Length: 425
Ligand code: GLU
Image (cartoon, rainbow, N blue to C red):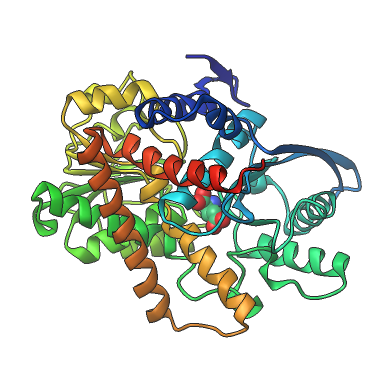
């Protein structure tokens, strides 16, 4: 497997190759025509832009931004925008393709896309981030559109960035275009339940998986890697189910408490802390990063970033169930090791699809101009996630494959049959 080099100089796995090897496996099992497969292998378009931004000190800095539209066969392309120094084209291509499969798995009428800007949002002021986001939107004015390509938050972005995209795009096009972006603040056409949606989907799919494995939530312990939006809310909702959360982590390190971590106190701690991290958290003993994923637990939720579970650590993982809150946290080679150990993995394109599902609900509400109660959003998204899990589980039994390959089979089957019916690429 080819490695790519990250900003810090470290060598990492190439997520595009990880994605492609699972895709190829699903193509083989489905006996899909190579010609159709080749259409779905290559992204529809990759746009690279350079965005000049006047920094607070008066200097101009140029940032590289990307948007990859992987497919538009099921509807407008959909996917988040990531702000990170590690953003690169191969990563964005993989993430865009994952969005295609993710939307197809949960059966929502979208294709897949992803965007990113190579920047360090933590070191930028609010004004700099606003100018960067507006510059990116201007550069992407012909790519984005409520019926073309609809961005959303991802790592390093949130409702504020979405509000700037909405505003800039609406100014360019001369009218409020609520449906051009999702994950917006509530007062600007956001949806109730969107902030919690990904973590909630993780909890719902974890609950379904626990039921299949005969695991009782109140007898289970759980370790959650990553304490941003997805990790913290997954931890909170799993704790509400009765699962004992014994480990949490973020960029400041890992924290372990076999008696159970007070997740609400940890969330509060992060909100109060000046750098918005768990640094200094005393609700658990500090664990070295390399040890964290190997902590004793029943359920492991990797909710940080790609390539965390690799052949280097997979055989030492103690969990019985892994529920992927992040995109691409497990490399393709690690899958085989986890399978041989009998660990069930609820894959990213299923487990974290709750976010894009409620993004879809937000877009529907924007088009209706009629806004749903939180209870309605939860009820509908829970139903979507549960049905998707059952559908994938049935495919895994039918084809005798793990849940990851089953998810790809479900997604690919859907996209490929649409492609055949449409007949034009
Ligand atoms: N960034 C999220 C994801 O990877 C959400 C995408 C969306 O809502 O469009 O699923």
